[in-house]
Length: 210
Image 1 (cartoon, one colour):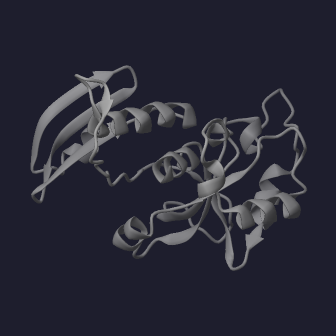
Image 2: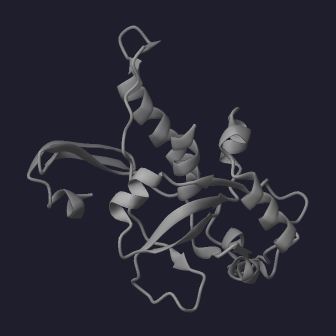
């Protein structure tokens, strides 16, 4: 957060609560916040709901405002590449998020925002194991993709609910699906492929779309 806020023209807010660190200020005349969320879709669940509450709920009356405010939210973070032709330190932008984390399954409205064809194609190609969460898929904001996507590698970002077995890693405990990463690498949806693996994007896209 400190690294990003150094580029602001002004910084007038600095707040920290556990892993949520927030710096607020201005950049080229625009109001901007940079916030750390910690790891995982569970933290994104907190972050997105409370950002929405901050602008769309009257916190004194606890009533939802009649006029809603939309926020432009961009995640900056590291991830693991799944394709051998993507060099280390590349900039990747997520046209779609493919979530294995199950968070959006707890919200009504998933069926309205899910890219069903992408999810069903992945289930069929990967022979998705029964008992694993439904792999929901959400399209990114075309407005933001057009605004910041120039020069980036575009593709599908897979979001895992954990760092070890959910991403095909092994220390002492064996992953249930032993060739999971290879299944992701081999997957294709038209001309699109899974470019990278991380732990937040599906919740960010899904809650944002809802």
